[in-house]
Image 1 (cartoon, rainbow, N blue to C red):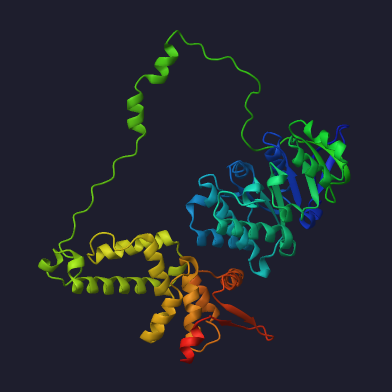
Image 2: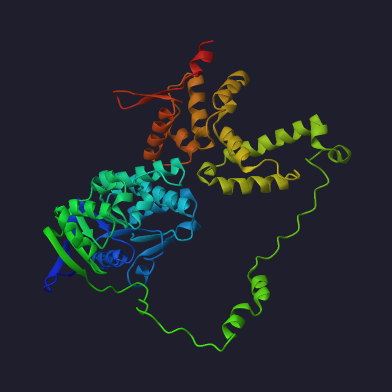
Length: 481
């Protein structure tokens, strides 16, 4: 099977070809301003190589979903799945060698970034037997590998930079070939851009981007002006998978995608005097009412009792005025949380799913109102899932005191590690730690331990035999005592 595709032609009509096998080993960087033809180029590359290699497209704008109309790509709507489901989908993509488009246009920017990062990490962490060759195309890569901190959360930025760096720096051995496209090289993290050996540079106007593009193409600075004069769909190409010298290429036609709108100016619609104002303002209030969401349903009537087996007279008084009622209520909430935490697969669900299930159980137990908000629930669920019930009361209280300042995202595994240390064990079982953290990926466990160690919460000691022991500062004080 021939592993060469044609992406376009030179000025003289000679075809410009891509060696797909070489591309898998050397990766690709595409740059061009909006309107320069980047998406058209990527679509051409994907269409021509669709029969040769598995493809994974990270699509923040919904531009590539139409590949499924002609080829065998599966469109995955990122907004329809929870984070654990996204990771499971990525593992199945590698296992079954499915070409997919991860469509993210239904998510907000930060959610797009986290969803894509989790998907790429799961591709990267797939078991060795599934390391089949695949092209991983990331459009608008400056979003997922920013050169400087922007408006996104710092944890999100670290997560996505780690995922993109793994893809471009270490993905080759796992069969993953990164193809990143960006509007501006200056906004793309340098350690991500530096790993590409093939380049397709489209039209750009800013001096800093032109100079970086010229440097990557091996052109002199005075030749950088050539990049500003490129037409739409025209690129300068260089790399072992394309050509050993820079060549000007005009990208060929594609089979899929939206129909291109007519270019140029169009005459405005004709309307009589005052007619356009009437079109804009007539029945405006009716349109607003029709577009408004329906009113929320009325709240359900309050139950007559706060908790089962509580007298009506006692339930009618404020809970704060009844310490015994508050105690019964707290015990019931604790039992609900512990029951949920020990159900199989509970920790693999998203926090929002768990919270809704918790509220349903509270209503079924006739607990009035909202027992606790989302933040409190996440913390108490993490405590319930850490398995602290086997500790004696004093040790459990001290372990909980150590975890008071730990964030909810990593509280459960931290408490599980601290409990193991308090019991004299070197570390929790791998299965126990995976259950508490809600993952089946050894790579995620390693990154979790690295993160906890960087925060100063634990100390990881690697043993020569391949094992490891975990120490929690502060636990040895009360264990020794």
